[in-house]
Length: 288
Image (cartoon, rainbow, N blue to C red):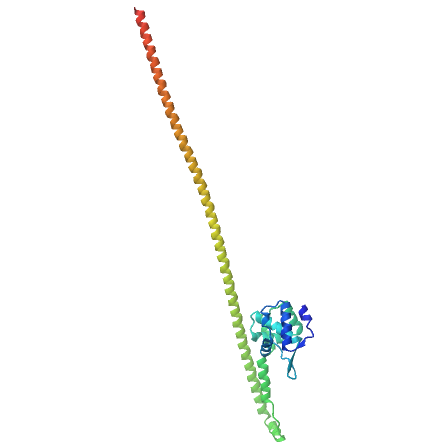
């Protein structure tokens, strides 16, 4: 059991005391909601709606106890979780102290089945008030002996009248329970739709983040490709320049070699001419 619950087992006080202790307990138990909104007005509203049992009356003062403290904390927790007041009231009223303590400390959220069982087992505050008013309406007035004898003679009529009354009351209770179930189903459906919309929004955000990450990765990849292409172009340009230089040098060497061959051919030609002249002169000398 939580310390803030255990330390208030003997709590007794008015609405102001209950608001103060409930605020401290809610903060200590880390219950959801704005704790600054816990005040006497909210407590009286919870009592009016049947979430909190009506306090004892000591003269003109209202006295709250440990049960009302647990009921208020548990009711506020469920209301902050989105449960409708019409379903919280019968559920809270059906719980005992130990169950309320577990709900507040462990922050247990009841399911649909638990709420429906509580709704059927525990009549709502308005239904209890209507029953009390109906009982007051049908309570028999003071009658004389003659009236009593007349009632005895018409006992069958009285029984039939009571049967009709209880049948109509049961039908009204069934219709009201059916309306409450339908209202709860609509509320559950709305909550489910809200959860679906929330998940869809989260999915859209996730897809948007993934798209942004993909775009960023594609941008990095494109930058890497551009860098590689630039490097390749630089290498090709350098290679082409080197090849061009090599071709020009080769052409120069070829021209130089051609010139040398031409000069060598002229020298050979001159040598041949000189040799021919010498041979001619020798032949002429021999003939003389």
